[in-house]
Length: 123
Image (cartoon, rainbow, N blue to C red; front, side):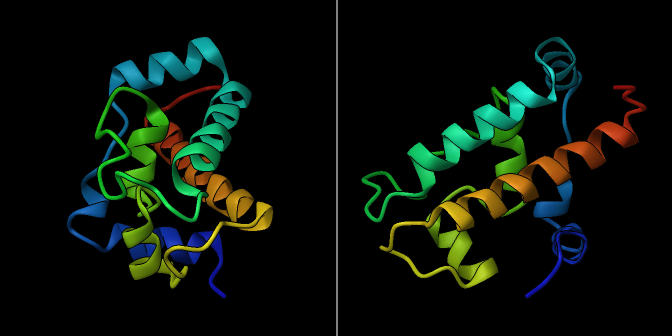
């Protein structure tokens, strides 16, 4: 099993995944809402849009922008079940366990924190 740091390194080496960045609007949103709220949103998005065994619009359920978590989901390949299968070998059409959901949220938040550090965000 890879660590979060190993996963982030691997994702960053992908031309597509490595191209994602938080916008100034995303950073402002995080500053206004706080990381705890953003983590809560990430947990909600993962539970509602990624965890079910059957997702009617799988592959299209995560917008490319509009919330920092959406950007992070694409950057971390946690945007749809197809990407989860390709990048992390998570079987499709199975309910994600609470532990799997937590790992996904932790990866999303780690990516966001790296982006904030690069932007000089001071908590």
